[in-house]
Image (cartoon, rainbow, N blue to C red; front, side, top):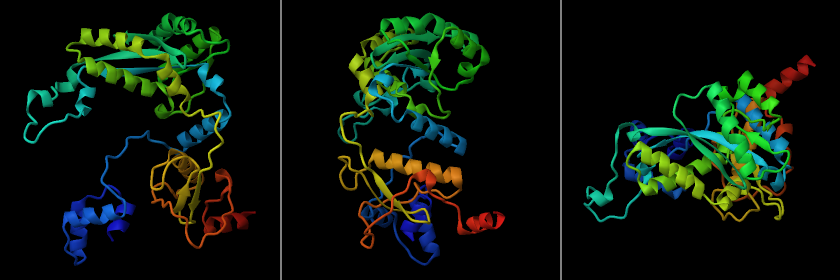
Length: 349
């Protein structure tokens, strides 16, 4: 019952499980529940925050992936990535860990000062490519379309020239209303700038998000005490980020000299993931992003075709004993509709 409940709703608390079992006539402690779940390889972990994806977003992301799956490292090196971010004065320090002895948690060395609303913040716009960081500026007022176009006019092309981008370079920005406004599109068109078509709800696809994290970590180490110092340190640390870091962020998924990976997954008709594996170097029971990507593809196909999902089900790394041969199939060719729906379709035709 414990495994079934947790598999159905991972947000169930130990208290909920204790109460459910007590109503069913079984008395257990929270420690027993923890031990039972850990024996099955399940531990309590923080839920990851991910973009909310509707079927239309899933379709757009799949379309983007298919259109660019054959792009070379040289293609990605010729993209200028851009975005805005907010940097708080004491924001990232809240996640820092310390080494300390028992009962010394309130010693000044082991504490982090906090201020309401992060002690103030600044908004930044920046751009970068695989060749290094471009310009970084502070946005002091509420940004609108006119201000955004002025930022591009003053900073985008100078950054391109500084980084010596090749002819035919591509500009990337997300689908913020300021970026997709008619006036902005017209300005980009007049400047003959090629813009990378970007799927909505996809900040996780933009490598500049990782660069922002790198910047914020570097700034936090220097512990700025006021907004003026925060802005100054942001500019200094941005300029210090090596070009190798930028190149790795852009090209980390481009392994052009290695043989193609071969992840696979066996999914039952009920949507349960029976077995998964990949030819990458991830060991048994390790999480593999290649399998995760494959599961995302399968779930995306399901969301587009119907309502049943698969990635919420547990995955096992041991191949089922009664499985000797599996006929592989491309995800978007699989019919995930129910037998009743198939029957209705046959009647119509």
